[in-house]
Length: 331
Picture 1 (cartoon, one colour):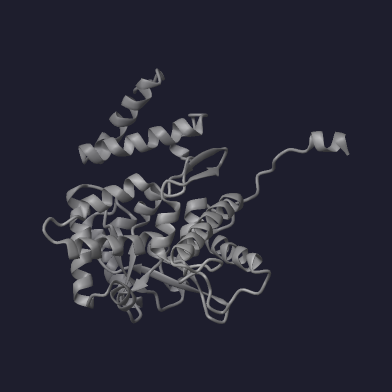
Picture 2: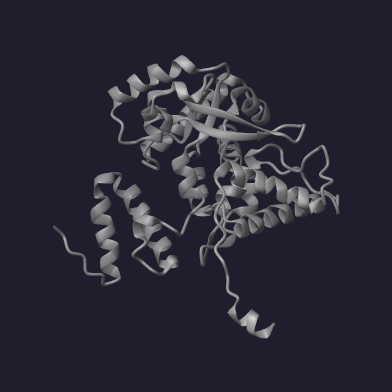
């Protein structure tokens, strides 16, 4: 047995696809309850599972760690309310507060499960001087969208934040305008979405990139898959930044033919990539040290935001590599 143990080493488990990873997170909760998960599930909705999946980057070990942290935080909240031994309902703000700057082992290094620095920057960006009430509503909106990163209906968001539908659209407009002014992202911060109402094989291949599938857990404990797509040209460009405006408008006219009922909003996938940092950036895979890789990637993003032009990308990366005394041949 001793010789066998010496030969044993860590193995790399394949990462499940997003839908399966989300179901895996729900399976972990069922395991914690020994198969007796209460009908009043600890998660407010499937967005919690998506947040844990993004934080863990679909790595089973990392998703387990992220879930443990969220549950511990929810237990802590219950104790603060005098309900020791209970678990507070887990919603978006719970996830953000629990995972903000929590270090998570992943891909041979450690990263923040959720980058608190970016969350704080967004909070500052959305501060409206002299209007504390709207500032608080914007902060609550962003926490909801980041901590539950799937499409939410206008009615649901309005009800949870405590404002009218028209006021919600106004707040989303402010968030997107502020994001554009500060060049935080290449596109929108919060994307208006519609639900796809046809068979996917009816959609041309080049338009399928705009279709985003999500799984939703039902009260029956079954999962259903729903497909959404952006309903504005700016929304399409947020998914595919290189798309020119005329092409975006043309694609939008086609996609809107398959729009179902309802109005939804989704946090930008680009923000998800930034706020749930991944040390395994393929663009920098020539840097063996993954901690250094993450550090350089974050610094490059900071410089791009400061300069506000993506055309500085090559120059920015060269600047950072020179700090490491890496010789780069330029053609």
